[in-house]
Length: 410
Image 1 (cartoon, rainbow, N blue to C red):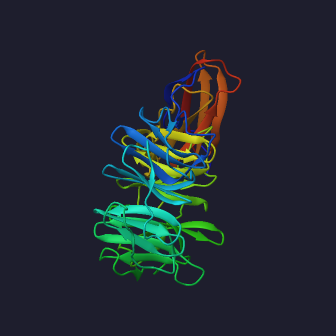
Image 2: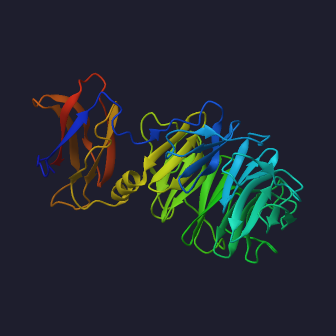
Image 3: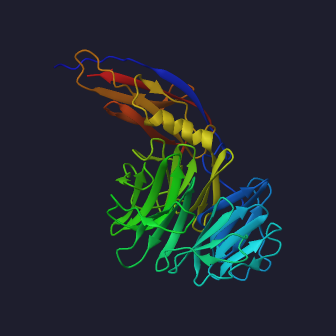
């Protein structure tokens, strides 16, 4: 069929190149960094106070939304933190030297290891009871805010992670035998059942609950994989479409699940793991050791890179629009805007066939206010779908620019 050129849509949108910081996607807070890095998914908020556990720097707190951080380690004899938990007035921290507790926001710490016979890895709250996972002695239970701990099963296993969903307690356990995997207790830790059906790998490093879905991050010989169960672990299915094999931890905001990776940044699924979308930005440290959804932000602790934050509305709205199959030709507002040195432009090519159409060529170009073309971002045939492209201001003066998109039907 001969090719005919048909323009079906043209859009003009203003964007501003700013010489200042602009509206960054991921904003780097003023700490903590330098004295250690934020590890695991343990950034939390109590009232107006934020706490962050670091690997080598102990515990930091912030009272201004994460803009500034102060170390609060009096009595904390080990500053290698692997977990944080708030329960009422008690703040618990798991370190290489065991569990510590404070009731005055970290001004004073005291050990809380009575009864635990091995190094603790994790801690979580189920109702009013505390559960601690250990390196190779299973799980311990405390009913008195950590004053006394008693064995609570899985005694020959290491427990990396514990998650709670209603009356169900899930433990990600590991060993060098076939006992690794996900275990379920429905009787407050009195007994445990292995729940590995569908898990091709069983070295579980993290768990997360989103509604009726349970997510598991599992280490394999080729990296890591994510599995999802919709029936309390009875069956598991792989959920790695769009996700690199470097995932390590999760953060949950309603039905939205974020995955932090080691070297590839942060990814988001809005469809229970069916697909994942990259939600990173330029100049963002992609080695993620902590993720936490707090109020209207998601916070990310990075390896030797401090703590970043980003508005949830910016990420989730953009990804929701991006993940749907488009039904119309569309050009979205760039973000961030103003920006320096780069910005992201999203556009959609519809899944609505035109009579006699075999394909379409999309052109996306940037112009200055005089109409001079300064950049061609896209000039190729595109199937139906949603796309994004990065525009860099390198070599351009600060000012107002326009971008135009058109579709040529072949």
